[in-house]
Structure formats: structure tokens, C-alpha cells
Picture 1 (tube, helix red, strand yellow):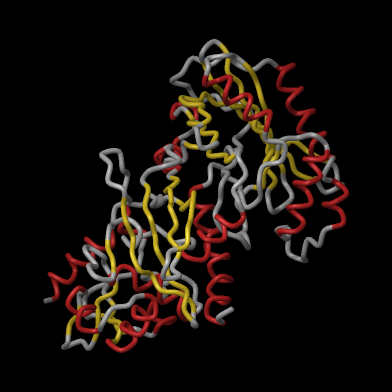
Picture 2 (picture 1 turned 60 degrees about the vertical axis):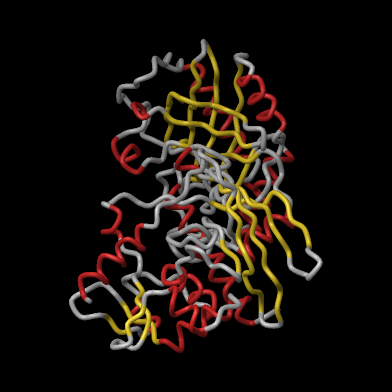
Length: 437
């Protein structure tokens, strides 16, 4: 395997955990994972029996039922004791378990008969059938209950008890950790109304929290949706998404959100794409407005947030992933000969009005090899921020090379229902260029 690609994949694995953490429904701090493509997000643990008003009439859970949920969660936690005690927890105060240990804890829960998933959704759900049956029943308007457990990388466990009664859906969460004496301990519970509880045709269970029961912080950050993939995600498809699209697939670039080919690059914005490809090419962490100077060494444009990527370096990176000549690249991109390169603008929180930007994740649903040896993947964009497992669909074609691969084309399926991520940085870059030229 190409050395650059190996380094990139390692970097990619670290960065995706951070992205998933930002959109998580859990307010418990997590360490970045070592594997990408999250398919499940845990419900947010909240203070014991929050008294905040709920827009949806919600029958309070009885003390007896809450005790039952707590006892079940403690019993589930006990099934992971042996694995947790034998695990290497490091020497720091914050426990961070390895992927292997998390997988072992998940398997222990599965062997004990529990429905469970890891926090970042890197592993398939254990014992998914009860949730599938529950989801189908809810879709048919039939009352019922179901529970699943989420294993965190610090060894904690969150129970999500779903219920559908009198046409009202709800979730009651129970969060469990290990205390200083090594005993399982319930540290948080909460009950929340759901405005939506649906099992999609693709096998995603989607729960939408009622904004009236989530708290002001939760509402501002828009963490309304819990996504749980109940049907297994084939490893071959998962690896294709990781290799060719990565953690930043739809983040502030339009590589996969517009139609283009090597004969017509259309609206493809290479300036926005460059920071992502730079990180992949050199094996660095993702470039941002705060680290671009010292990681890449780019000079800034006076009195602006713009950086200048030197002509030769910009062209080397882009041409490593595209069959494009330098003249065409320069014609299609924003550059300035007096500064000696191309304009680049890194991400910064101030561009998003203090709201963390939400982006979809790629889900490869099919792939095939073409007569020229290239591979085409059909991809759905799973967009938790909008509560959909298919915000849009596109076909990406790539060709393997001796040094890695090149992008050949992308075709966006046109639909009036498409939800395409906004390119905030592109508009910010254009405005700043206009101000300095």
C-alpha cells in the first residue's frame, strides 16, 4: 500500500471521531476513535428527571418502571465486567479503551442477549432483530417497547429505552459507569418525547427528540436526531467509503455534491478542496484557519484571513488526484500572480455563527468495475442533522494508480428533495478576495 495512503488513513481515522463527537447526541465527552464512518449516535444523558417543559404531552415514567430500567442497565453493565477489568485503561485519569476492547464489550453484551452498538457505530449492531421488529411495529402504529445499549470508549454504558404508547413515542435514558470501588453505578437518567420514531426502508432507525425536552444547549446545537443502522453495513462497502471519500467527504467542498468529469469539471471548486487533499497527500491533520500557517507554512494575505498556497505545491497536490493540466486548473481556480499562488481559506468557528456545522456521511450502497478498470460507487449521503438517511445520491468513479488513485468523475442525481451542504467557506473566500483585490 502507498505510504502516503497509509499515513492518510491513520490521520483520517483520528479525525472522523472528532467529527462524530461534534454531532453526537451525548453530552459525555468522548475521545476520538481509531476508525471512521459513524453509524450510531447515543441519546444524550441528562440530569436526573429533568423538569423542563415538553411540547408533546408525555406521561411521566413511573418509579417502578424507572427502577426496572436501572436494574436492566446495571445487569447489562455487569456482563461487560470481565472484559473491562482485564482491559488496558492507560495511566491517565480519563479512561480510553482500545477498539478491540470496545468490540469485546459489545460482543459480551450480545452474548448476554442485549441489543447493543458501539458509540461511534464502527461495528454492526448486536442482536438487532428486536429493534427491527419494534421499528416495523411503530411504522404500523402498533404500541410497544424496545431497548438498546451504547458502549463508550471510556467503558460507560448508556441504555436507550424506546416506547410507543397512545401514539406518543419516547426514550428513557439510563447512563451507567464504574465507580471507584469497581461497582456499576447509575449516574444519570432522563425521559424525552420523540417527534419521530421511524425504521427506514434502508434499515436505519431514526429518532427525533422533541425540542421542548432537550434543554437550551441541545436545541442550539441542533442535536435532535439519533441514527442507528440496524441492517449490517458490508465491510467492503464501508472500506470503499473510507478509502475514496474519507471523514471530510462533504465538509466545505463540492467534490461529491456536483456533477463533473475530467472532460468538464463543471462547478468543481479546487480552492475549497485543496486543504482536504493537502492533508491526505502529506499525511497531516486537517488544515484549518488556525493551523494552516504552522503546518503548511503558507503565507497570509495582509489584513485578511486568506492564505496563499504556492503555485507549484497547489498544482502538485491537485494533479495527484485529478487528470487536469496546469493551465485548466489555474483557469478554474482563484489565484493571484502577485502573491505567487492560489487563495486558500481555512475553517474557523466564526464563519458559522457559533453553531457547529453539520455535514452528512457517505454510505456506499453499490459498486461496480468498468471496462477501463475504474470503479464506480453509488453513494447515499446520510444526513442526521436533517433526519434523513438519503439527503442526496451520487455516483463516484475513481481509478487506481501506482501511487494511489485519481478521481475521474462524479454524477449527482438531481432531485427537488436533495439537501446539499452549504459551502460557507467558498462564499467567505470570494468575499475576502474581492476585498483585497
